[in-house]
Length: 171
Image 1 (spheres, helix red, strand yellow):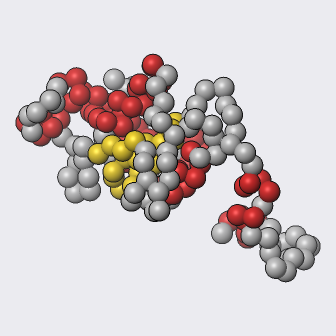
Image 2 (tube, one colour):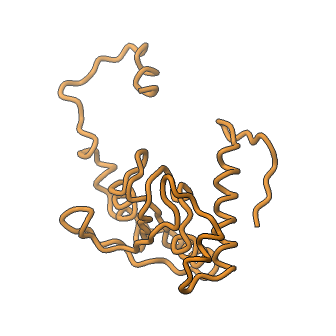
């Protein structure tokens, strides 16, 4: 809305019918080749940047990978996920990119990397609970997820326009 209101005072007549955004030539380009494949991460239920947008963007770049984090909220840091953090770590440290997404009939039957979250609304991550669940959970995993929680808290402290209220340190 802010963008549209910003143009309100311009002395330009609207063209009828207006051009459909999807028909714009810029949206019909061949996939873009980057020096190294990109990694896109989308939450299943992101109210700002929905999963279909992450899929659409990943398909615009040659060899780009997509990770769907099964969680709610805006951005992958909205919920702590050992699986997502491990895949991000592998991307940055080892150059491992998940395979490009394959679109299905809808978002429920597509084929791309998927990760479960280790927390969800009204049940936040707790290292003690995480370790008590047993299985293959380790102290290192719990510490990694605790670091994600610290990043979440730090990002909540940043004001608009990127001006931090204070300096942060992460594990």
